Image (cartoon, rainbow, N blue to C red):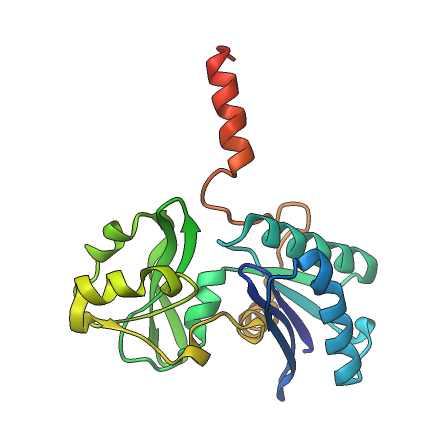
Length: 234
């Protein structure tokens, strides 16, 4: 089954094509250009370089967060448009789960962290058991200190949250905080594609109308709107 995976959760995002033979193509960018500028060209380039047409893609997998609110909206709306046009199946994949998937057979718990701003991180905990990924903690938006209290054994941290909080993790957790090389710290669209492909092959499909980004908290606009409503007694 040929599946396209798309990840627009963080600034390091991309597009990948994967089949039973392996990764056919993976295109990753870590630049400040918005996904409204770079996503469709990335999809087009991946297809052209792989010599594949869009109607040959049998299914789509898209990272649904947590992550950048704008990036998630652009990614999901783009994929939904492609699915409506082509009739393929679609599954959503947790951004944090896909990140943990990139460290197979890791002997330690894995904790992807993303910078959620406002002094918080998006995080979760996983462990690998053979070829299965076991979730130890639900996706959450918390202050880093709350996560630290849960770490009781050597744990591998990855994600763009390290750019802000790696020093804190090192100083507070000491030898319990483990970090992969730079090349293994970000998300990969191929991981989104592989997890999605597994679910599609098992018969799982997401409802196109119901699939939505997994934000974990209100957007800034929603917070301001709620504040205005509260101030006027609505």
